[in-house]
Image 1: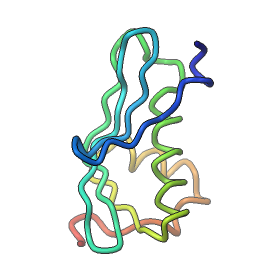
Image 2: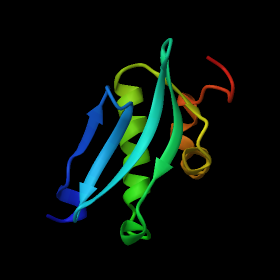
Image 3: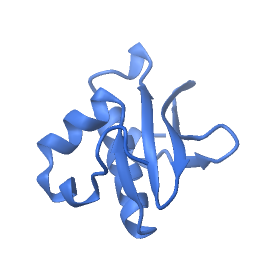
Length: 99
């Protein structure tokens, strides 16, 4: 299975969006807030680094938020940096510490 074909799975019980590739699991952890989600942590195992896995996860989380009329609080520095590089997602931002 190629990176692009692997599905991203929302696991509410673990509060994470995860992506399994080649026996490794990358994920974005989140917390539910009223009308928002806080992205708290992004993990990409070393064998998957440099392949766009983290970016694919963050884009998916932001698209999920937009589709569900949710704001995003980027408590994770990777998520914040990704949004900073993609101004089309600025409209989803909820201030750090808000919620």
